Length: 275
Image (cartoon, rainbow, N blue to C red; front, side, top):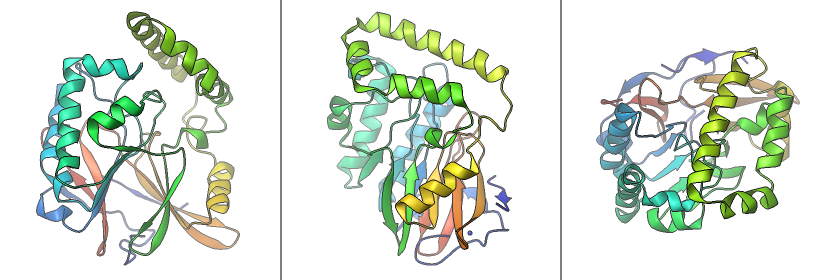
């Protein structure tokens, strides 16, 4: 369930107030009608069959009844280049995504910290649009900032230094010139290194920082933000220059598949069976 945090709304109408948690209710295809759906941090991989089953259920059901679908990063547990499309698990995911776009539903996918090498071949295969690092969309009359969220964790100095190096276009071109099998080995090594690094860090360091959040609200001139990355689903109220702003953090899929439904009647968290 997505708890409220006092740090407020949905497009069109405001939905749940800042101090009230959005209700987590089972997903139905009908519930997504006229709504825009958001999800992140699925971390899809062969080793996570329950997440894969929940994802396919989402693509075959709620996603096809949506106004649009936004996936805000870390769709895959790792992505080492678009030649990964050859893998059977990936092919199945791509077919599921293509089913959504072939149904006429616009699909937008952001890069995460695990799948930042998603490229144009992937976009063409799925029919998805790749989002820039920050994107502002109008959700039923409310301008809303979308991002993965890792760039907001500025207290994690070591990660931000790594991020600056790995996101450098020169570094990425060099990576993509390596043989596929070598890139896979590098990805596995980076995952092990990341897990070891996290074990020695406090939860606070790995969360977003108030200053970075406030700066994002100011820079983009919005009063609502939706992001993932931290795996700490909640709704936060921030006061920025005297103005109340809402920040919604999406859930990860490690235990249960879920998505955020934003429609004219408010904001709702939905759970998926099979996750």
